[in-house]
Amino acid sequence: MFNWSTSTRHGRRRAALMTIVVVTACGGNANNRATAAGQSTSTPATPTSGTSSARTTTSPSTAPTGKIWDVKMLGDASGYRFDPATLTIKVGDAVRWTVVSGPPHNVTFWQDSIPTGGSTQLQSDMPQTIGPLTGPLLNTPNETYTIPFVKVPAGTYRYYCTPHLALGMRGKLTIGP
Image (cartoon, rainbow, N blue to C red; front, side, top):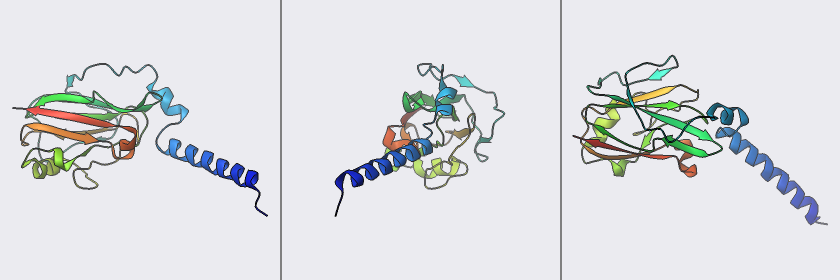
């Protein structure tokens, strides 16, 4: 005989266990939330030229001729996001994405958002890709990924974090002449 209350109770336990597995895999544990505590998400991006002591992934083929802009990769109780989510740079600049909390993170560009003729150049300027227009997964706080935008056409480039796309982790980069 089928016991509905036993079946429902086991189903709830399985659902609770799966939720814990998914949240933990996406970086939703207490240690990651604590890492981001006190971090401001409203500070504007600032150009920098320093280096980080953590593993850095940069393009060996094209060196930036302008500024290097920083974008934080965050995942905490406030959500998963790039900070800033929208950035305007010039041709010749580079963007350095840095894991702050909630890894793994990466940068993946939507093919249909790239200006005509830009996909091939962007792909060649992206180091250690794991797929078309897809950067590697960064798993450690302070790990960085830098892309120079030296030879790409001006325009809007939309991107996202593959593991956290469903959670709304998206960004927009506007490159001016």
